[in-house]
Image (cartoon, rainbow, N blue to C red; front, side, top):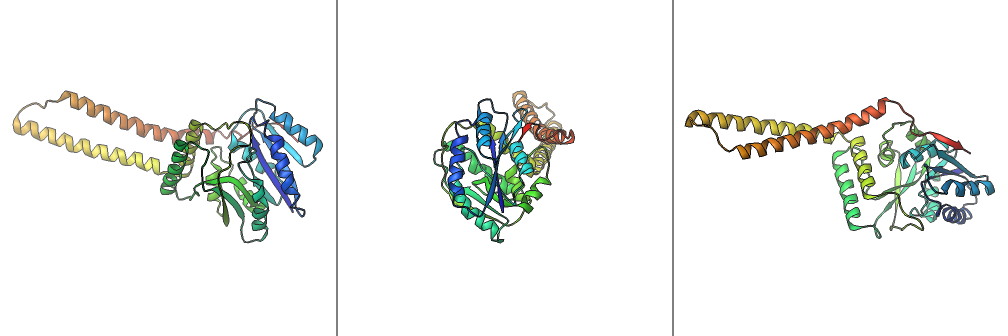
Length: 307
């Protein structure tokens, strides 16, 4: 049985050899498993590709895909799944925040036939800023309330999957990708192993707070229509309030035979309603933007070199 190891990489020259050596130590304990690496260079600006090519030159099991530019981790993950040939497939971060020592137990779980996938989830976020950890927890609580696709709090992309599950994921070639949701949406029996957070072995992360926020919004828009329902609800509520207010104003003017004062308050109300309208338009525009990207049918990535 062959295990395909997918490793998205972006500006990770310091961690390539460290990751490879750590994985080789684990492979010594998996004597009945063949393996292949698929490093996906996501338009790195440093010497990441050169380091990968060094490994490929000394190990025939090391393969790589290099993109024509930076397409993002989701595209890199999809490219790896497309090129993987193993009966078992795993996705791992190159910074070793996904501990390779869990692989034997994960592989055993899938090979037993009891599980189609064995994933991992962090039970602590030690080393992360409190603000980042807070928003991460709020994201999982929020999206699980508004989406029919359940997403496990702290779940990582690091998982070992059967070929059947990988093929199911590849049947979803959507342009706007959110893998955590896709892995859950396709179903299949999945078990999660818990572990404490591990900090990067070297280098710096390319995920800033704002890039993570953008990624979270993508997940919400991709796997829930609730924001559209909220926008519709806000519109209905504001219309009802406006209608009642109009009736009150007209009745007061007729009964008292006086004009209605309070222009400053009226201006404030107009601004408030205008803000609500812009918010609703922004929500609708986000969905329309995703539709626009999908209907153009652009490729998820463009490869410059494959070996």
